[in-house]
Image (cartoon, rainbow, N blue to C red):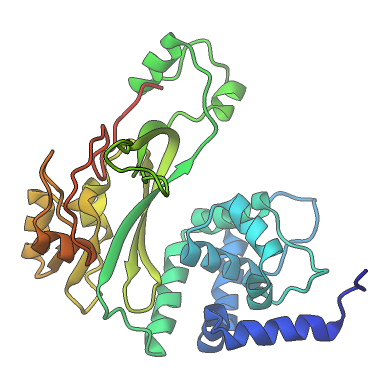
Length: 324
């Protein structure tokens, strides 16, 4: 039976994280987050806050949590869990194992107060400027990607679905019910490539791709290729095609011209947009139905030739709208 962890056990863990190259430790050394205290205090003073309740968490601590959310693309619930679970997050925030962690609602309320004060964009612009001052310039190209964020499924009648599609609130919904209903999320299909089981005969067992219905939203991000930092972000319903969001995610501040993305972003419109902005497209090319990819294109896509065609209802990057 092992004893309780001691001080030196935690210290050894932190040393191991540092030896592995903890990026948050480097970020804390690069950015002096105390420079945000004054604008945070001013912004929070202007926002409306209800009376009563427990004392608020430190403003700089909460802003660093928002930075973690932006860098790792985390929801409020996932942020709360990751802070409790990851030592690197706790060290970055200055929290101990016995420290109180802000819950998801607290994180959401803090961000909403900054949004109401119209300060969040200015704060993140200042954060980006601090990175640039220390040499973290966006000069390695950019990677564009999207991921589906699931939302609780709605149980609506056909009449309610029709009203929501038309942008109306169903007539029999009371204000309390309207607040509880998600009228912006949509259905989509997430496609997963099939894999041949180990030891199975590829000719006898023809793989079939999976089509998984997903209800929720899409998180679209633009990542700096050199530093791995998320520079641009957008959100949409899950049924919005990835490629439609590419112009919104391209950062003109990135001094490198390369743009990488999967086949969902390849279209004549996007290729023309990138060419007009002097960007170099590295977007993957899509295989024609029932035809193998030419080796030149396959190597450009993945570095590994593809020869066997796939049979599936899913094409890469396809997003299909489902009824509510």
